Length: 452
Image (cartoon, rainbow, N blue to C red; front, side, top):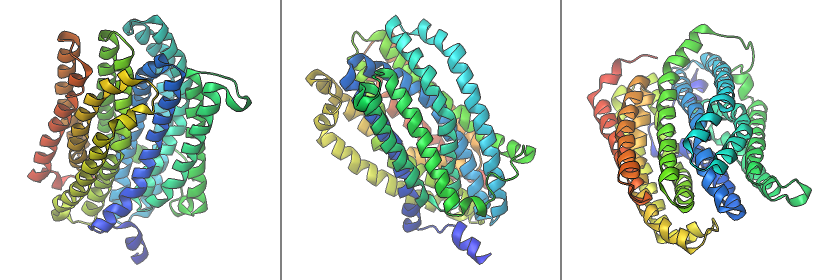
């Protein structure tokens, strides 16, 4: 029992926070670097490919975020069992997560082959872009089962204080993505030149490689045996219901969040006269992913540690823990945003789109930078709500923020037809609307009676 306590019950220190967060940040950063790598190669292939990637990228992100939501629900549950010193329950929860992930992935494939093509052809006003997007997504969606199973390793390794093992699979995925982007988009090294669709094949291969490597690591390190992973794989109604109750609201939360982002990108495509605004917005999505990876890592740490210490019965230490995480998250975000604002031309130039692209993109970077600082503390407070087990509250907070966000972008982009600089100011409203209710709820202490 002492050994289990040493391994699984967390201490409320800056060292513990950093120890959990750094490997998670690397695991989040590398996929974002993969997105940027895709866009750099596509940008050098054609401006149209980079523009269409804004639509296809956000579409895939909708389903990826559903897996992320499932992972967050599992993370809260696994962390709670770790804090309670119930390692035998961890493997059971994880195994049910695998079943649910595969079912969701199968549904996503069906939707992408039936409903999505009709929607894209009806919504996008340029038929050529619509057909490019449909062709790409029919390939890209097959990477989802690999991605979902790969994502679940975060819940397992972070929830059991073994996040350092995440890095190996992440590096393998990154190397595979760069190699196959280079070979399949342009037809290098004797491979066929597949252009835009080459990025889809490259991403699928990379996700499979990342999944394969991390599960080899889990097996070799004895983690699979420790928690009896993949043994007695059968439907467990009790744990499946528990996961659904925890992750269900989060799935809807993340889905509507990214769908609203897709709504924004579609409005850009409908109301701008060139590919440049779409391409810039696609790059801003990469900025959020790359420069915001530390904030998302601290958010995962907030979820895990809050759930863990509640499992230890230390409810009175939750707010002080959140404040510690917020100071670290916001401090790092400010530094990263300062660097981005000092060298915006250098960053934008790597996409190979010319001087006008850079000139138009710099004001948007300024807007997005402030949004990322707001995100750095808002997302920590929101994920702390998830850590308490009150995922219905998390969903309600997100829903309120999305209503404000969607109304704003519709008025700015569709009614007033202003520039994307004003459109991206929607992120200021979004993160502020998320922070205020999360802060009020956690300070109220109403979560203390929740049992998961």
